[in-house]
Image (cartoon, rainbow, N blue to C red; front, side):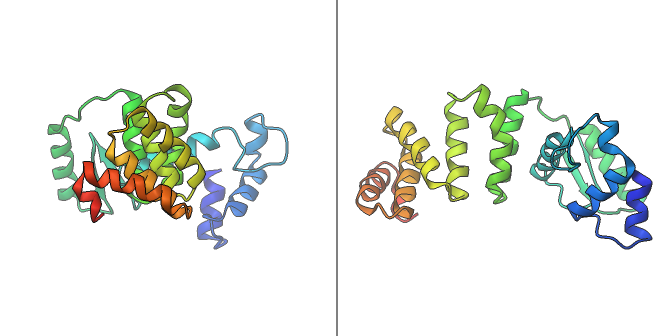
Length: 208
């Protein structure tokens, strides 16, 4: 499979970022049959496709933007580098001890990083297992609401935020975001009350 992909890129000058090209190569290589997959071959539905998507999102959340990128002990070094730079990076990484976090907390942080990078759909992809297993956790619900808002899924954002505000009326951030959501939905009178209350609790929201 690797040889076929390299040949397609370097010899046949095909665009290996094109899903149709990769699907054709995978079909020719018999990848679907080897994986025990039945049905029309598609890289979107082959076993492992969801894991690959998640790994790509985690890489993005860690700050991987180019190839090659070396990641060691939470530090990253981008691009081709001279041996001296590689040695210095690895020495720094060896001295760096990243804080060990539970898998759920790491996933939540990766999702937040994607949201900060303006990839709300990627954030929701990483949040999905957390929403299924820890759907009652306020942090998970608030981050999901932010991702819904950022991806213009306003009805979902409003439902999530109304629940959060109902549970904690003094949460000025959730109330402010609910007001902005209602505003974008054209429900200006409802939005005004939430935005005003949020600004009273947190004056910065008066100009935000």
